[in-house]
Length: 429
Image (cartoon, rainbow, N blue to C red):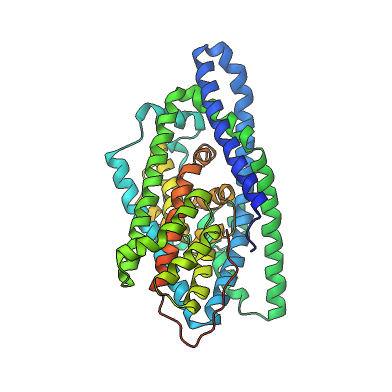
């Protein structure tokens, strides 16, 4: 997928600022109206509630077709890369292990941190009430046997209609792998169809996100009325925890350099320029030239750099599984949903897999395509996601910095290529 143009990036950045401004205005207006009494609040809430709910429903309707089409195309492309050469296959295997490790780290670390430092009680209660969902709406997680069987969709169409993400992810992965085993002319036509579905859904999502300031303002108005301006405390708590989680993953990426027998000081010096570009642009693809130069300074061969770095930028976003699972865990915490080990395991697996679905997508779209399925499979309400999207701009900076750090580290970790010709893949954003 070709990288977005600078004009598109500028538009996306402008949209993020509009969403953040809508959040601040909504919280402030809600708190102000709450102080004026029920008479001033009731007519506004009667309008804001349906508007915010309709916008959230519009986002929900895009999740299943977009994620399924992205996973089918992404799985088929990744399988093709693995078949193209041993080095590509080994790199993909390394990516898979590290993405699972990233999600597993979040599943262990974040609940422990929340147990010691929970969200501010009053603000969390206000956010929960304003979202219009409660823990009582979350069904009991199934027994281990039922949970294992639930991963096999007896009827994929019914699973899609019910929004059952775990079996849909399994089906999409199996379907994408199967597509690589059919006649080339049939495979190309099949993947072209799903690419067309993907592109059409992305257009639809962009239309919905164009109206995001209105939807977020309506939802924030309800939050401000229920929780007052103190809701900012809960959102600040979320930003700190999620950003801290991404920083921890970044520090763990330095361990990969040690495993690759690269001196830490040399690795840190080589990766700083790429980190600086990532911090300022929130774009891994914009950091690619700096990453190529950094790996050259570390003595990585040109063939290895030419093959592994574009693959890493396209497919390997090490902070995504941890941060996306972190969003679901934090939402569960706010709603008082007790996450059983089986729910966390399901979340870890889905978080690792759907991180592939974010390849080449702008951050706002990625947030819903990756966090929505995780919340659904763990039984966590989705109502807070639009509010959390509005403050995602800060954690996203640390996500990107962690991603480029790990991209350089995993390139150093890859055995040097000798007679294999480089076969770079098209990089995503």
